[in-house]
Amino acid sequence: MSQQVLLRITGEVAKPLGLTFDDLSAVDDDYQFPDVSRLLPSRKGDAVILAGLLSLAGAKDSARYLGLHSSTDNFHASIPLAPVREKALVIYRLEGKPLATSAGGPVRFYIPDHARCHSDEIDECANVKFVDHIELTAERGLDNRPQDEEEHQRLHEGQT
Ligand SMILES: Nc1nc2c(c(=O)[nH]1)N[C@H]1C(S)=C(S)[C@@H](COP(=O)(O)O)O[C@H]1N2
Ligand SMILES: [Mo]
Image (cartoon, rainbow, N blue to C red; front, side, top):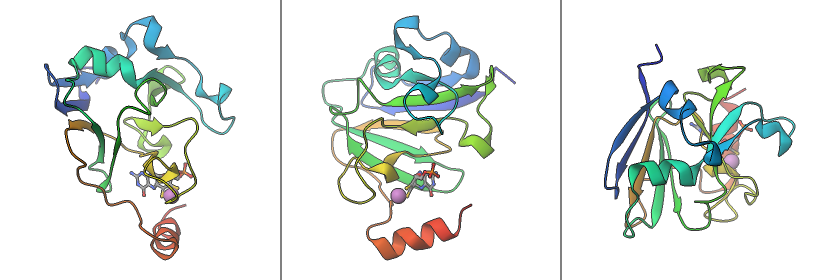
């Protein structure tokens, strides 16, 4: 179970990775962020800081955009990398166990001070759930976040 690849990191990196739960738990303490409820009481679990994963994969200077892909529900966001690299969190563990799909697993992306939905490139809609692939690109990549309030409303109606 813990040998299963939960998160792939590909694109503009020196070393593409397939990370298991154990790999994520073994990321250097400097990059671990235990208990995200310290930032937002309604968010639970433990995270790694995005920069820790980028350093493991050897992100290249050419990497300017961060692609967040969920194959679970085919949701994708592509956001500028620089503003989020040191602060965005990748939540991967809840009560010592892998993050379940019901909690947004295998990993859930969280930007602590995101903008309101579709007000900016880095908005709440970019807090992608069910992430299984992080892709670094030179240019903006696949992004199917809702574009306006109507589309947004429709997306949320399909969820709980
Ligand atoms: N995989 C996936 N991630 C997603 C979405 C989605 O539909 N699928 N919706 C996004 C939108 S539009 C918002 S506003 C936030 C909502 O997060 P919440 O469910 O924690 O409120 O999740 C974002 N992440
Ligand atoms: Mo959203």
